[in-house]
Image (cartoon, rainbow over all chains, first blue to last red; front, side):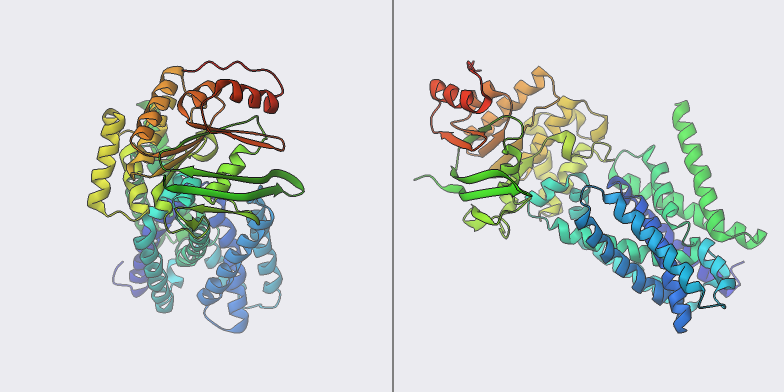
Length: 263
Length: 243
């Protein structure tokens, strides 16, 4: 299957997703923000439709709209500080509402829309891959500099702030990076399934991992296995790549829970 | 003259319309063991959070090591142990050693120093046997020892504590107060909120009693004086038994 250029692109993109999504996901899960990926991915849909309306690459529209949505989350969180999930619910429904209204103006997006919802390995262009590589580089560079600060923040935000870490600023950048991670992942797993790639491998890894680094590495291994397995199966059996990838990771999660229960 | 570490001047704070703290001023000096006593809702935790820069007030000023708390570049000289049930994420998948090492890296220590400092702190508290265990799998007392190790690992000049012994057994509580006492004797300033009045009056050289519209600091350990203040803020007579 590797003789096909689209499969080469799918595997490069898939590998990027399977490293970045669980890496971000480990911090998302321990900070109890699992819904945020879902919220931002629903907003990405409206960015895709908007880009199609203006005749530009959908991935650009998704980047702009998800980053704007990230800022909107900051705004809502400040106004509903005690009810953080409210901001995520508002963003999620606003994203879907905007996408559905915009779709009324663009008839030609509809056929392509399913591939964005559930992922499609044949739909990944060279342009998509270049942008995914650039966004992944930005995410890795940020983590390289701030890994320990975010670790401290995730464990005990008050202590981190008291000891001089700029937790407010880092927290905001973290949400913007989740928005970028959503864009990186959307062509492979589809916007409806992105958050599962951030959460399911981590949930499976947490069953066995002793340390934080082990959790990150194990979740990446699970995600790589799921993504490569999912892309391969979707190539040979003509399945939706996103659904196949997520189902494989769910099987791994269930197996890990059952095996732990038998110990 | 003793070095001034924390300086609070004319501090007031309100939550929405409700005044919580009113025109409070005090200083904490190097080597002080500063205890804060008061009933629930008297503003103890709010005062501590203001002193740490976790929240800010428009009225009054707070300086730490001579710098405004909000913009201080010397915050890595302090440590904070909060009420664990409110702040710590106990399901966090990390070992005790990883937690201490990563906290040190987060405030700027390099890998080699952080390893050494984490190992020293673990030895000091005597928790080598649990250093490679996941924090969430430890008992309350063991977790508290791990948090002491984390707090002292950066060799802070001052430690703030907010009801640190809530939810731990009597033996672990005793260990905790002894550890803080030893630390204080080595020159580290302590600022601790606690409901354990006898522990505070036994170990602290300065005791602040905070109540509704009342803030009084006892500069010595005169039991009678403190009992009078406690009667005022708790509304009933208290007889102190020191440790």
